[in-house]
Length: 326
Image 1 (cartoon, helix red, strand yellow):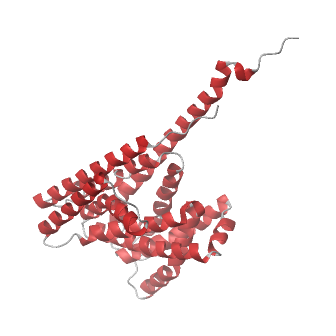
Image 2 (cartoon, helix red, strand yellow):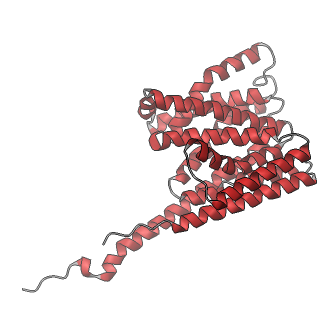
Image 3 (cartoon, helix red, strand yellow):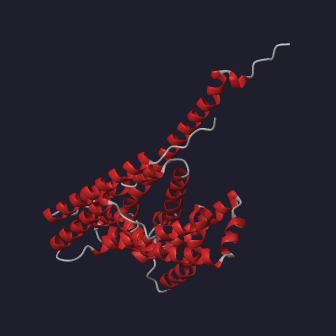
């Protein structure tokens, strides 16, 4: 009796699952790319949203952002049934401590960003986010004991020269750029410490929960003293302040979904979308002046980022690709 041929011996049949898997991966990456681009586009237009919140001050806006973000996170935790996961994190002192530090850094970053928008220094803020990848590399050296290769050292040297040129042009250090870059870089370092242990919704929930007593206390004092804007300007202004929860949480959740679907190198390329948009808005919408020294400094920063990107892509291509099981 002859044996029936196994489907595993059929090349077409064997190729089908692989082809299907490849197609699924392509769709997944395309979805991730779209989600990532959308998240950075949202972050890119945020300065326009913050500009609409006048006459609210930067501290009031940050406090409102914390309170409404926490409320939205509670709703999201209810929808995705994430209260148990969040409670587990709260019971771990080390994780809670890292997230407490992260909440402080993100509050400083938000405050610097909003202050920059309200004082028409959006270009300086955008410089901070251009510098951030270089600052992140520096943090890796200092805290994670990472070693730099020649291209990375070159990028760092060009970046330092850029800050020096801009400082000479300003007559002072671009402290707002350094504040934004430093706070966001340290926030990223804290989030790196918790790794995959804490998801995006739980992390933002705990961070805003830590900040909310201070934020809520400040808002109550502000309204009691007659200096708050939540109810005294217009219903539209109140709605915009409430909308800060959505403006904060949605890009973060989109980014989190993208990061699970595309390679880190792709995310590295996408991260420049937001500061480029902020830079353009600073010049065109907010009418900020760009003296020669600032142009030279920005060109040096962009050159450093090109060097850093080349290094990232080169190292990504050198990594051995996983061999499919036989």
